[in-house]
Amino acid sequence: MLKAIARYPLIQAFIGGLLAAYLKFVRATTRFDYEPSDIVDQLMADTPFICTMWHGQNFMLPLAMWKGAPVSVMITRHGDGGVIASACEKMGISAIRASGGDQRKLERKGGAAGLRAMLKALEGGQIVVMTPDVPKVARVAGAGIIALARLSGRPIYPLVVASSRRIDLKNWDRTSICLPFARGVIMRGEPIYVARDADEATQEAARQRLENSLDDIHDRAYAKLGTVDPGAVLKAIHR
Image 1 (cartoon, rainbow, N blue to C red):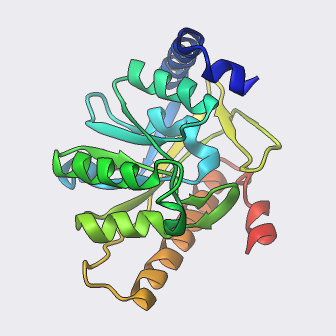
Image 2 (image 1 turned 180 degrees about the horizontal axis):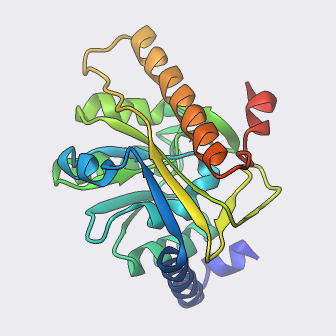
């Protein structure tokens, strides 16, 4: 079905429009708590930066950005990516169509071109959003995002959007889809910088720090809502 959708841009645009309208409704009806409380002011002051969240949270991204935020998001070239790209564009978020996560695969699936596009977006003052997961291996950060931080000099901000009312899919990344009329938590981790001359050991340490930070803020955000991160089980499977 996804291949069929990929062949029809008008269908992608229609479904993307419905998704955008739904996300706007969810954002309008959800009462969000922010941690830290001045998270928006801090992120605005540090723009441009690299924003990242685990792959199962990718539907939550538009809920986390403030109105007018200059955002470009990396989205897969696959058929479902076209729908997400269309929805993002209708919400004022630019789409960079590529695949990433594992630096070894940057030359495939448009990854190298995607990296160049993200660097250009950061240079132009855009917030760049990408999920760090190794493709089809959820909750394991790849080297691609570390390469982006090293080459751009911009910080990585781990982010989570947790909701008390949501649908948790039983797919490879445990995708969460927020439902309206909920309580929510938007939480960020400490910024992660990677020096341009960082050696392999330093880059690996940054990658591990990113994984740990994302895990930590997911655990704390869902705990504030009295629930459990639906993707927590994936850590035990893949690590």
